[in-house]
Structure formats: C-alpha cells, structure tokens
Amino acid sequence: MKHLFLVCMIWSCMLACLAEDGKAVDFRDYRLQRSGRVRETMEWTTFFATNLSDKSKPRVLFIGDSICRDYQSVVAKELRGLANCTQWTTSRCVTDPLYLQELDVFLSFAPHAVICFNNGLHSQFTDLREYEAAYRKAVAYLKARCPHSGIFIVLCTPVKSEYYNSVVLRVNRIAKKIAEEERLPVIDVYTFLNRGECEGKWRDGVHFNAEANAALGRKISGTIKSAVPGKQNTEKKG
Image 1 (spheres, rainbow, N blue to C red):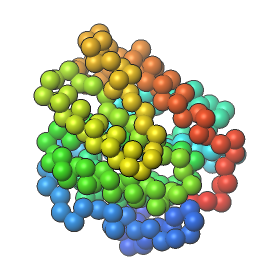
Image 2 (cartoon, one colour; image 1 turned 90 degrees about the vertical axis):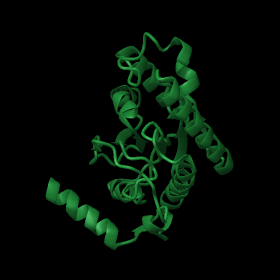
Image 3 (tube, one colour; image 1 turned 60 degrees about the vertical axis):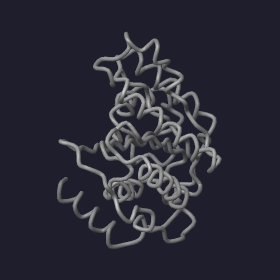
Image 4 (cartoon, rainbow, N blue to C red; image 1 turned 120 degrees about the vertical axis):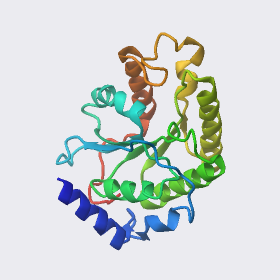
C-alpha cells in the first residue's frame, strides 16, 4: 500500500489532472507561492472510500479533520441507499504545500456529486492572512477540478480554550466570507452545537462525545441530501 501511495503521489506531481469537463487543472497553479506553515509535532492523513466499485449511486466527499472523521459513520448510515461516501481527513492546514497535492490524488479515485469542505481547526498557529489566501485558492481549485460537484462549506466546531476558540471564530468568518463571494452554501455547525452548551459534549475540549457526533452527522447529512442527485454520470472524472 505504501508503494502504491507513493506512485500515486509521484504521478500526481508529474501530470496535470483533468477536470470533469476535460480541461486540464494543475493543483500547483492553486498553491501559495510561499507558506510560513510550521509543521505540527505529528501530522496525519486518513482516506476511506466506501463501496468504491459501486457505480450505481452518486458519491459524496467529506474533507475535514478529526471532527469530520468522528461523525463519518453517522453520515454514512444516514446516506445509505442514497449515496456512497468518501472521506479525506487530515491535520494539514490549507496553507501546507502538500495539502492540494494530497487532495488531487484522492479526487482521482472517483467522481463526487457533492463535496463538503472544512479546514481550520489546525490553523491555531497559522498566519491568518496566508490562511485566507490559501482557503480561497483551495475553493477555486475544487470548483475548477470538480465543476459539476455541489460544494458545501462546513464551518469549524467550537473548542473549550478561549484563545483557541477566538481563532476558530476568525477562521469561520474567513470561510463564510469566501463562501458568500463564491455563492456556496454554508453548514454552520459552530452555531448548531452552541458553545455555551458544549461543556457536557466535549471529550477533551475539542472532540465530542458520541451523542454530539451523531447530531453533527445528522445535521450535515440532512443538509446535503437535497443536493445529492438520484443518479450520477459515472463517466465524469473529479
């Protein structure tokens, strides 16, 4: 598996990918020229695509972090029979030079009718001017690479630390501004969870208990259901 992943990464670097409409889209055109991103002590990425051989149903891609990973089982259950799910969850901030490179590889596995995009909780020590520029480029890349996909912007969830939560509020404002500029729907999970009522929902001040994750999964799946088509043209790539 490691060798296969490396081959995919090298292939992605060498070749420009095609968007769903056949136009060449190179992720390198959407990266920041310079990034001050400092590596975390531990960086991680996980990728899962359920029922990858099933071409009869549309596919929904969830891009996020460990919060996204925690509610995935609920989302998959809620969308069962309607759509298959793909998830790419990572500690990488959008300013990371590897962010779009990895995303480019994972987009190539299957076409996605709907994409839920979230990034921000791992931006605590990121220059937010760089973050805004990189976030805008990431959205532009997704729109160019997957022009037929419905894209939802998912905000970040509240955290217990007052300082860290102030960063969450700032990245959420950036995400909402860009979503408005790009005319993309926003799923406001920050307001949905209500930080004032999160004391009994947090496991560690960031991640949530099973009940809260179930509520998040139902909220997100319920919001995007109307955007999932009854069937998908599986000949498209993206």
